[in-house]
Length: 200
Image 1 (cartoon, rainbow, N blue to C red):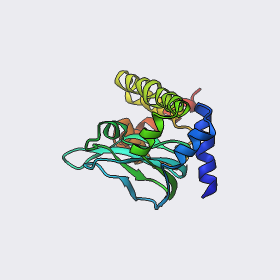
Image 2: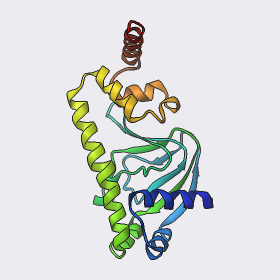
Image 3: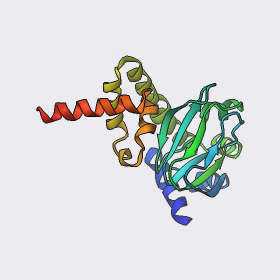
């Protein structure tokens, strides 16, 4: 999948331009992989050693409570890097699982090799900082604050804005799980919004 490798390089350089030396070091960490819809890429209860880049497809990260109920924490589409980052950094058991919601073509990145390359190539380090700042600090913090403050309807409106590019690809029950509501509650919210728009 040479197109997947090119896609990865272009994505990296959206955050920070990297040298040929850095790119060669990064390529030593990569493995191409295909997943079928429903495959679990990373299981909860295991210590992860890799993270991924999505060339084609859609994934979700979720947690499961003691009663077996699943709660979606995030969705990842093309150009994103699904991972249980905290567990990777701490080398501890992950509470997150990552599942393919569609057939996916991905590139897996060996975390230990990546860390070694990271600390020997400053421009790769700069890319990593820019990516983490964008998606794991600024984006994540804004979402968490908003979801603590807002009622379900406002959370849904925010979700529509944040995930507008993949809305048509997400089943409603997965959206409801992300919002922390039932599918029935989501249907009621959508109905009330439709009724409100008709009266405008």
